[in-house]
Amino acid sequence: MTPLWGGRFTGANDPLMARFNASLPFDWQLWEADIAGSVAWAKAIARAGLLTEAERDQIVAGLEAVRGEIAPDPAAAFAAAADEDIHSYIERRLTERIGPVAGKLHTGRSRNDQVATDVRLWLKWQIRGQGPGVRDQASAFDLQPPTSNLQLLLFDLIRAAVHRAEAEIAVLMPGYTHVQPAQPVRWGHWLLSHAWAWQRDRERLTDLVKRLDVLPLGAGALAGCPFPIDRAALAADLGFAAVSPNSIDAVSDRDFVAEFLFWASLTGIHLSRWAEDLILWSSREFSYVTLADAYSTGSSLMPQKKNPDALELLRGKAGRLVGGLVGLLVTLKGLPSAYDKDLQEDKEPLFDAVETLSLALPVAQGALETLTIHPDRMAVALGDELLATDLADALVRAGVPFRQSHHLVGQAVRRAEALGCTLRDVPLADLQAISPHFTAEMAAVWDFERSVEQRAAAGGTARSAVQAQIARLRVLCE
Ligand code: ARG
Image (cartoon, rainbow, N blue to C red; front, side, top):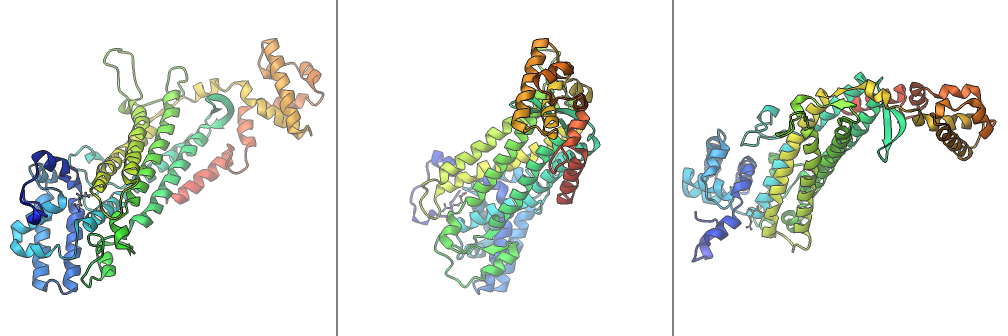
């Protein structure tokens, strides 16, 4: 395969070098973005007087024909190709179709500004689901990765959490810190704690699009375009919000990949933490939840096993996502100005992160929607000790400073231990021996519903406060 840069070479690449250098095995995914970028570029150089209208039309029609030949089965189209990269592939097919006029397309353009443009365009499509061939979930296992819609997938997951939180708002469970039972909470309140993390992920994703949505095309190899290209019109044609302000930066910059991989890592970490809670609670010792068969697997050795594999994989994928981020950051560190071939290493972690989350998000949603909860088991786990803080708060309402009331209840806990009973069952006389501030009316604290309802301040566990969260998330997810 003749490379795009053969002129000054007399010898061919060593076959190992050709394999080492080739990016087509993975960057073929950019094919549609590459064609879109080339169509817009042909129009831009025609506007600048570098192509006649007839030449422009020939090139555009040729590119459309190449699109038509790839579209039915991209994986098959690229399987046998030996081109260096997707840009070389598209240009070769264009030349084979329309002849030497294809050689005018690359005027004023470099693969450096071309690849940066392709990746930005491709990623915008994956985030917004606006590109060609929007992914429907059923086709997630196709060899040909269709365009994803990460914003929508996150949105659907949050909505599933909000829906469950509202439907099961009455269910109470122990809340934990340090994995130790702490205070009663609503199950829905716990669920929404994760929905808020996912909501921040949505916001971060929208925010990074501002920096992604900048067009590098027209920057040339590094020094800009010597022809009078209207870059604003080019950006408008390709649907970019702005043009890069500096040609060196345009071809150097992979911040948008790093930011996206950070976003993917943090989203993965959020899924992982959510999954970890449920893994623990699906253990027989807790049995607060049962994962549906659809999201579990068995053991090849132990017939009784039902393992929470969906949740474990969600937890595990976070490591892979963080690995992609760290790999890219290390690649970028100390990299000389402008384009260096090291930058080819941005693609595999990026493609992998998109693919990983395109599966992980709907799997998390499915696991959540089909999960069975066991409110009776949660109720059994609600021990009286979870209300110790409420007893201290009752003393506060009777005028005792909190530091002191905390200490008095601590002494009551010790008394309970000495008597071998729970805090609730310590006789009033024993409590009053500790402090005369303990009264018979304080027995009202031994009520879990009352405890969660007391926390009606914004962000708390009271039904009204949880409903307020639900209402806010509903507005955000409209
Ligand atoms: N495959 C290359 C990449 O992914 C395309 C850009 C090549 N540019 C160059 N000057 N060799 O980065």
